[in-house]
Length: 94
View 1 (cartoon, helix red, strand yellow):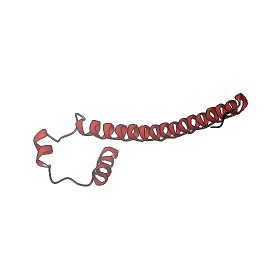
View 2 (spheres, rainbow, N blue to C red):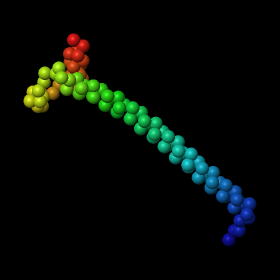
View 3 (cartoon, rainbow, N blue to C red):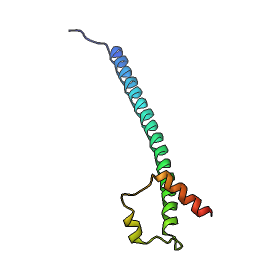
View 4 (spheres, rainbow, N blue to C red):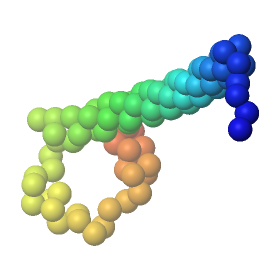
């Protein structure tokens, strides 16, 4: 059995603390990266929400001549969203 001196034990303790510190720093770095990614995603989702809100507001505007029945009748006959939004934009510009 090998007996360690107090100095050797202190060195081992210091190495352990440095290893723990390195793991914590890596964890913090990973969490910061994940936070940045989620923040970018949140910004994108908010932008999409705002665009959809504007489109919905345009559809429900009092000047809109579509009735609930007409809208329901169009189910299954939808155009691609991009095409629909382009037509909506053109209609609003005129």
